[in-house]
Amino acid sequence: MTSNLPMSPQLEQIHGEIRDHFRALANGFQRLDKIKDSTRQSKQLEELTEKMRECKRLVKEFDRELKDEEARNSPEVNKQLNDEKQSMIKELNSYVALRKTYMSTLGNKKVELFDMGAGVSGEPTADENVQVASSMSNQELVDAGMKRIDETDQAIERSKQVVEQTLEVGTQTAANLKGQTDQMGRVVNHLDTIQFSIKKASQLVKEIGRQVATDKCIMMFLFLIVCGVIAIIIVKIVNPNNKDIRDIPGLAPPAQARKLLFLRNQEYMRE
Image (cartoon, rainbow, N blue to C red; front, side, top):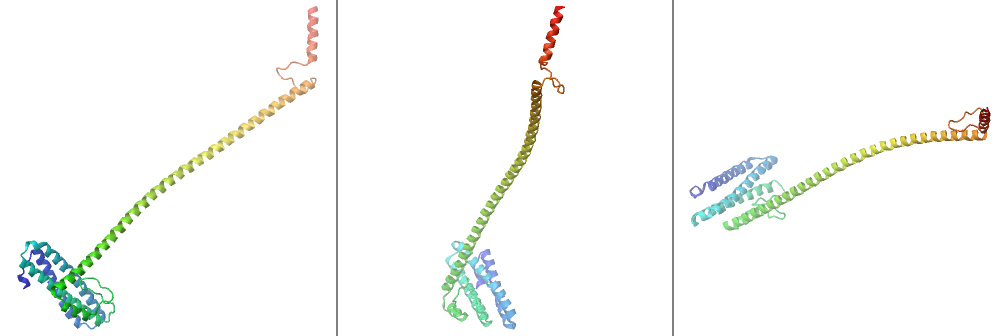
C-alpha cells in the first residue's frame, strides 16, 4: 500500500527513513529476547530508545512536509498520506509500549514515558498504555502524538529563550567587566602620575631646604662679621689708644693725633 502512495521526493525520503527505523526496532526487540544479561538488555533498550526518538523526530518532519504540500495535493491523496502518518504513529506507540514492558521486566522503577514526549510522575503502567492505545482511534492517536510533539517544541523554545537570556547576561557582564578593567587601568596610570609628581615635589622641597640652610649660614656669617665690626668700632671709640687694634679704614684718626697735626700746621704757617 505504502509503495503506491503519491509522495513528493521529500516525503518519500522521510517515509523511507521512518520505515528503516521501524525495521531496525523490530530486529532490535527480537535480539532483545535472546539476551539474558540484564546489563546488556539495558544497553540494548537505550539504543532502541534513541531510534524511537529519531522516529518521533521524523514523524514530526513528515507531518510538517505534509502540511506544506496539502494545498498542492488532492483530498484523496491527503487522506491517504494522513492515514499513513497515523499508521506510523500507531506503530511507534506499539514499540514504545513494548519498550515499557521490557523496562518493567528489568525492574526499573523510573520508567521514562517516550510516547511522543517527556514523561511525568504518576503515569499508567505499560499494560494500561497498551490498552489505552488500542482503544483510541487513529485520529485520537494522531492528536495525542501531535500534542506531545507540540509540548516538546514548547519546552525546546523555552530552553532556547533561557540560553539566549543567559548569553545576553554573559555579554553584558563581559562588557561591564571590560569597562571596569579600563577604568582601573586609568586609575593606575593616574596614581603613577601622582606618585611621580610627589617624588619630584619631594626632591624640590629638599633642594629648597638646602638653599634655605645655605642662606641661613651666609646670613649668620654676615651677622657675625657686622657684630665684629661694631665691636671693634665701639672698642676704638672707648679706648682710642689701644694699639692692639688697627685703625679701621675710612674712620677718622683719634682726637689727639688731630690736635698734634693742627699745631704742626700753625708752626709751618709762622715760618
